[in-house]
Structures are given as C-alpha cells and as structure tokens.
Amino acid sequence: MRCEPAALELLLAARSWLLEELTPQLAREKRYDALLVASAMAIVARELQMDCAEEETEWRQRTARLCKLYPGIADEGERVVDFLHALSAQLARDIRAGKFDDPGVEREALRQFLRDATIDNLKKYNPKYLELEDSA
Amino acid sequence: MIEHERLAALERFLAGAARAQRVRVESAELLKGGAIQENYLLDAHFDGGRYHGALKLALRMSAPSAVAASHTRAQEYALLKAVHAQGVAVPEPLFLCEDPAVLGRPFFVMRAVAGTALGPRIVKDTRIGGDRDALARRLGRELARIHRIRPPRRDLAFLAPLETSPARHLIALYRGYLDALDAPRPVVEWGLRWLQLNAYDGDDVVLCHRDFRTGNYMVDAHGLTGILDWEFAGWGDPMEDIAWFCSRSWRFSAPRQEAGGIAGREPFYAGYTEESGTSIDAQRVHYWEVMASVRWAVIALQQNRRYTSGEQRTLELALIGRRVPEMEFEILKLIDQALPELGHAV
Image (cartoon, rainbow over the protein chains, first blue to last red):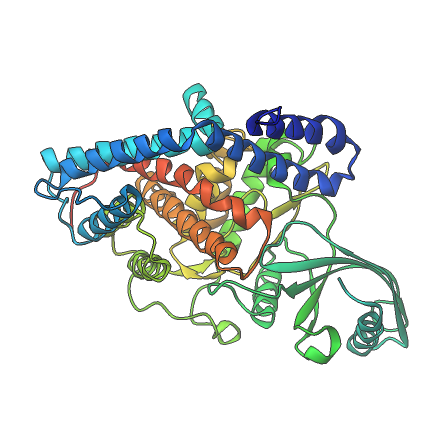
C-alpha cells in the first residue's frame, strides 16, 4: 500500500503552505531564508518528477553524445554515471590542453555538446533563467 | 551571536580605542548575508572621548570558516582606510581589534551606514536608490576613484604583486582551484581556454574591488550610501571590476539593465570616464565578462564543496552548486558572441 498523497504532491503542498501561509508572517530578514527553503523544495520536486529511469536515460544520451567526440571509446559496462564522469574529466583535460582549439568539425561538435548539456542542466535546476533569457 | 560576557569585553575595547570613559553597547544585531563574514549592527553609547554620544556601528568579524581568497580583517581594515582617504563612499573605518581575547576572532568596527544592500530588492524596488541612471553614474565615478590607487603602496603591501598579466594570473589560479576540487567542468575549462587564447597584455594595474556589484553597495531612498565587502580587493586590471558589475549574475531579475540590473551601461561607463579620464574598451570588458562568469562558477563550486565536505552546513551553500549551469550558459553565450571578432594568440 502506498500512502496518499504521493511524495511529489506532498512536497508541493508543503511548499505552497510555506510560501502562502508562513512566509508572509515572518519578519522581513527571515523571508529570504524561507524563499531559499522553497527554492530547494522546487528543485527536489523537479528532480523527483524526473524519476530514476528518466535520469538514467538522460545520462545515457549525454554519454552517447560525448562518445561521438571520442570515436573509439566505448562504454565497457561500467555504471553510466561513473563512465560519464570519467569521460567528462577526459574532455576537461583535452580542452585545457588545446585539443579543440582549431576551428572545424570537432570544435563545432564540442560547442554543440557543451551547449546542449548546459541547457539540459538549466531546464532541470533553474528553468526560470531560460525564460528570462528568452524574453530578453 | 555575541554572548553576554563577550559584550562587556567589547565595551572595554571600544572605550579604550575611543579614549572614552565608558561605552555601553545597547544592542548587537546579527545581519543577514555574509557567508564568509559575520556582520553586526551595534547601538553604542560613548561617554567622553572623540565619539561622545550615541553612535551606530557596524562590526565585521570572520565567520568560523573562510574561503582561501579572502583577506584577514586587519587587511580589510587597511583597504578601507586607503579607499576612505581617496574619497570613496565607504563606511568610515574606526577601530581594528586583532586580540582574540575580546570576541574570540579578530574584527573591526566602522561607522554604520543606513540603507539596504540586498541585490534582488534594489533591482526590483525602484522606490529606493534614487534615480537609477544617476545611481549607475555615481557608481562609475566611485569605481574610477578606487582605481586611482596603484601599486606599490606600503600600507597595502599584503596584496600580492602580480607576476604575469592580471588575466594570466587569474587563469592559472582558477585552474588550480578546479584541480583541487577534482570535479570536471568542461564548460568552465572551455571558458578558461578561450581566456588564455585571447589574453592581452594589460598595461594597467590598479586596486580592484573584485566584488563591485549590486548586492555589495548600500542605498537609501535617495541614492548610494556606501560600498561594502572589500574582502577580495587586490591588484588587477580595471576592466575586471567594470565587467563584474555588468555580469549577468548581478543583474538579478533585470537582465536587460546591463549595468548591475539598475541601468544601461551608458551612465555607468560615463561616470567612470568622467572621473578617470580614460575611455572604456568594450571588447576588453567583454573579455572580462567571460572571466567574471568563469570566476563566479569556480567560486560557486568551491562554496558548494564547503557544504558537501561538511565544513559549513548552510542551505545557501547547499543550493549554490545547482546555479553553476547559469554561469556556464553565460560563458558559452559570451564566447559565441565574441568568436568572430577576436583573433588567436597564445
């Protein structure tokens, strides 16, 4: 048996209560803290909505895109998160060493990869930022 | 908090420093906002001496843990003295106490300035801060005044001299910070690589505030009342401060108000130019805006690590790691905008 409301719904209810009922009654200098708590809850809600399977899919997609920058490197059955971490570390070292300095296909592929990964992260952690960006 | 028994020690210190017969501290309120410092607002009453009467003071003390790039309180006090003498709008520095027997940690005391420094609020609430173009112009003038201080200075000898150009120095520093964190950030590396390839030999080294932005100055209903938070000041390229002020992160909810979320760039640049007599090279500011986003990303990663390592468990530090993609987005955007104009020179 699963209790109702489900985790996500309960979290959003708690967040609304915090913002609508509690925050207005707080002293001004404590309101900022309440907004920080609400912000943490919103992030957790978005991450909950994206369940484990989806997150795994996102990591696999990102790993696949990253592998395109490194033909020859293959996923050897490690946990995807470890493999992604190792590939990112390699990428960071190669960028620093200047391996993507020359204009061309590789540089453009890297630029696109970095852009996609960053936008994915922003959508998850701070979607409002992109909305402000689009309206600017 | 300042405990009761510490308060008596503080009163004795203040009386000695001000040559007063007696000092009463009637209240000591901990202020919001310092992740690195603790700031208190004191209502004090001096009997005798130079400050006879009621006086509102601000007391600044190191937090239990501090980041590597931060000055000691004694150094910050020396910086305040130097810029105050230059006519910069800062809270007047009054007394420094390095004796840990008084409050447990070194601290200094300034004359309190009135107003608010909360960045998001200043951006949103146009009833405070006075006319926004005038505020931006004034801030430009203040910054130019800070930049009049040039090395060498005996009173600021603790500021490390630069051995390479300011940009190359910072690129090496931030790479070192990233390596110490051991968390790969390809976008930040991409930014650093671009900064290296496009570095220029800056001929101008001045005192930079290095955190000159909305959120670190105070305004009342009419305008600027004081520039705060000198803990990162050091020798650098003057364009670093200009770019930091204009960087997207410090525009808060007003990204189109490119000067600190309060105005366009024109009045800010105009104030700076009027006071300094030098014009601003937009391309150099753009270069330093990439640096600003790289720097803020690295600082956020360091602050986040202070949470995950257990060094300082505050919600603010826990959340800050998830803001790094904002800075990464800016790095990518700014580099895309710059690529056609700038050449390559390693």
